[in-house]
Amino acid sequence: MSSKKISIDDIPKNGEEIILKTTANLSTGGTAEDITDFVHPANRQLFERVARIIGLNICGIDIMAPDLTTSVVENGGAIIEVNAAPGFRMHLQPNKGKKRNVAEPVVDMLFPKKSNGRIPLVAITGTNGKTTTTRLVASMAQQQGYYTGYTTTDGIYLNKELIHKGDCSGPSSARVLLHDPAVEFAVLETARGGLLRSGLAFDSCNCSIITNVAEDHLGLNDIHTLDQLAEVKAVLAKIVQPDGYVILNADDDKVYSMKDMATGKVALFSLHADNIRIQRHCDAGGLAAYYEAGYIIIRNGNRIIPVEEVENIPLTFGGKAKFNIANVLGAVLAAYSCGLSMPAIRCTLRTFRSSFSQTPGRLNFIECDDHTVLLDYAHNPHGLKALGEFLNELTATKKIGIIAGVGDRRNEDLIAMGREAGKIFDELMIRMDEDLRGRTEFEIVSLIRTGIQETAPHKPISYFKSEIEACDYAMETNAPGALIVLLVENVQKVFERVMEMKQVQEKNVLSFKKAV
Image (cartoon, rainbow, N blue to C red; front, top):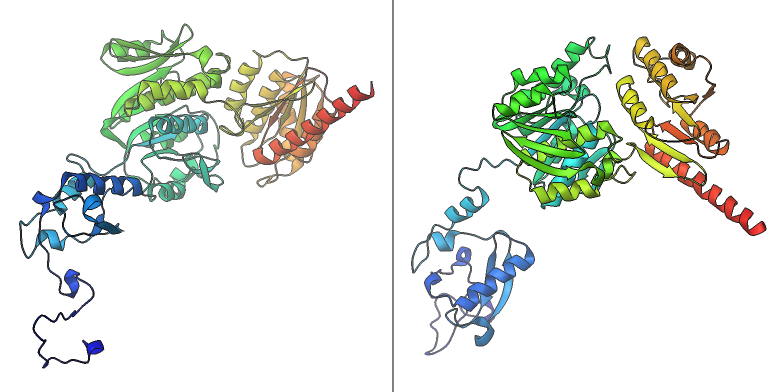
């Protein structure tokens, strides 16, 4: 009005148009008329297509057009705005036309009937095998099409993206992941340390897996016995939803006994098809998975489901890595119990490998010119014994073990590491971790050496200040056809060093061939 120099007392001339406002929003005096029943079908299709292209489940689309009863493509109309947070008032209380409660279908879409708003959540604990099992389940969920978040001792991942590096197997990392609204499926490695210090980041889960219970970390956080450690791990058996599954290792007495504490249904897995616990469980209608005649099998009551031949599962190395067969069994049961499809499960099993990119520090083989390097995270007697059983299946002119002891473990644990190493390797190199965790180098070396001498008193032993120093020496002085097994602490650093040494060796070989 001020631009036309008129006031409230002026009277417009006959036929004169006075624009009071340049907007027609309800908040500025506009009016709303519901014409939903008269909108042309072509317009409906166009508006829905626009929403899909932008990726919005709910949006408001503003159009300028002569009318909406004909196609805006034909009548000269145009879309001028797509609003991700539209108002509902014009539909709830229009000035003219039918009132429509649009809020109700929106809420029904966001929170479907009988839905509690939760996403599928799988929690995994145990002494060994947690990280590999976590990554395997997460890969199956991604294969199914879920936007998957998972936490491990390596970091926090959203699908294949590492968003935070470090040991993220505790509740604080789980909270970071569970607070992300994009995550549709969560897989959480759950270590004893976080459980004891801070509990859990969630009140219940759809599925939990308990891989095994063995001597590790005893003497820390007032956990001194295997029974006490099992009691900590059993927390995950007690927080599964009633219609969910507690997945237990039937070959482990401590784990199997947790079935009596389970708040949900119980599923069992075993490396042995004739395990009586599996047979009784399935005869009673229970769910289980086992390894039989070269196949991963699911049995649901009396129904037998062949999942995949182990020869086709790279993670198992043709069935030689028994501990990874166990990890596969637990992961397959978790995926199956969470409703993932068999094609998604099988595809993952066929493509998932023990590579540095997929499972860093877990059976990472690096083929060099005339020898092989294996990086593995085995850090307790139970894990080293399982690794030794796998290495016994492999052929090498010499097996060299670069081992270490974790300083905050008990004397008997360090001695047991030496004892197992003495059984496995032809030559031993004891190297130090960067953090000795309260011990001296002399203490750690002496205890490991005591164990080695119990089982292999005549095998050569050498000592190194760091894993890089030990790695360099082993690769420079190796025998042709040797297998160098490095039990890593800093897997990224060691992997990069091995690859650097490999490239140098390959250049030297190439130069020698050219000279000849």
